[in-house]
Image (cartoon, rainbow, N blue to C red; front, side, top):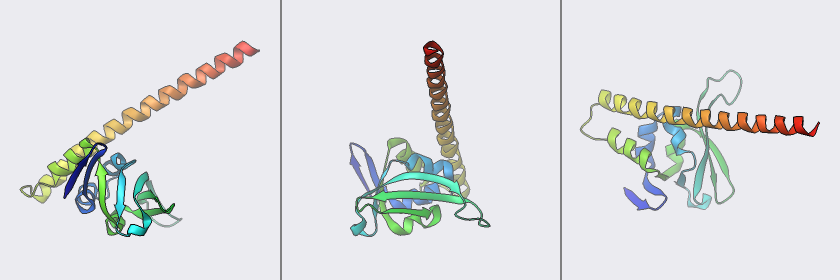
Length: 153
């Protein structure tokens, strides 16, 4: 089930979760995406963080997805169980392309895995470029602040 809007395309949460699995690289592009929870009382939400972390000492790290809702609730769930609480997610075109390509019924399980790996690598490269750009911005700002401090002395 798909519904196009100007801010992305609504897709079934199951299709997205099947694509993303427990791969942090596939979940990161969902940050900022609107979500429709299974419980309508929560209201429309947005994925505001995706982390690889352990909830406590002695527990292995896993992909955690944090969503905030109109009801002012914030829920953090494991990537594997996120789909149990959501019906749809509004994804950007790049993510829709990945979901569609890798969810092709004609692909074998091995082909689906390779498809996801290709897109995950692409998403990781995009993430890395954004982080490098952000680091460069911070360095420029720090140099600017240092020059201002030097000038005021």
